[in-house]
Length: 515
Image (cartoon, rainbow, N blue to C red; front, side, top):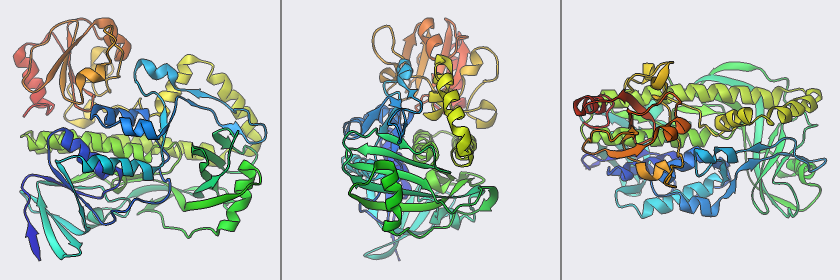
């Protein structure tokens, strides 16, 4: 067995969206990485159907977003149509979120296209390398990690400073650590398939509200659709505790899918190009970090497709982990930083799992006879600007925050005053100058002064906004004289009132922003 020593670079097992995004994020922060991926071919099928604006902001901060916007279908409004009338059942308008983001809605883009664009970006990135090999095992040697891989040349070892398991729901690395997903399944079989057909004049989101369970379709691009349907033989769904990923289910004969396609689109020529059937699930592992080995994406947590948040959650794991590992490589306390990642992302995984579970119950257990009243209530509710904003922020994952009492690398926080800004993500607000705040932060750690010039800290950008801009974007309790420490992932690490240079430097060290 040969051994390749690569020094301080990070090893990433898994070359899907999460692993590739992490490698690009590490490169943004100046850290080398090697991605270990067995299959270097572009995957078939749509799988994840889009990227929410909150996730697109990550790529924007790293200077990578333009190809995704150019190829995807940008939507600032989601309005599912009743297949019987072609009229919207209700309409969700994300455009009011433009005050906090240049990308308020969603970009519809099949996961295969997302992976291809990420691989294109990796090819142009000198700090990231992709190795075509299968990871057989991984181990923590105390001061470094080792991945045992097999490729055409045989079995060899790769060494690195840290190893990230981004190798999916059946992760070899996670299983080697003796950890399995735990959580719940809902006894509903959901079939997802892609279909190509002539679709001129059809509304881009289609639902059959008269069918028990779910039958819906979403258009990625002209002529190409994602269909979601619960299997008609399912009994009344119940929730059951479970351990381990849900079992894979066999494909359904293509001819058996024709009635669903004809119901959604009318009888017309079509071609099914990909399908996947699964039981609904909400699961996670007990911890996301074991020594120098860290878990991200589906290797750490699994949620059902309801709401389309699974891949997005994994990409947000990568955003957090990229700056975390970069800080450790630069000399920050490994336990502070990696335990912080573990706690923060486990909290988010718990919140997202609960939401997915509720979404699943609403989508798959709502009796058909109650739906007209439910849709009417939804239309009434969405007339309220406040309710519409709360719902769109929740659906697009913008309302998720980190809690200082869990994180270990956030200072303050709590329920009162300016401390409530701690752990929240700084919105990409439009400043009086016409610039957006994110363009000034640039995906780097920063000191943000509210109406004052804060003390400078080496390695951190300095930005000054007025109190009105801060209150619109963060908390109304922020006042002139407050100084914020903002992490590279744009979450507020600390809020101080008129700090000295020494106070601010101490807070930056305590939050891992400087070694």
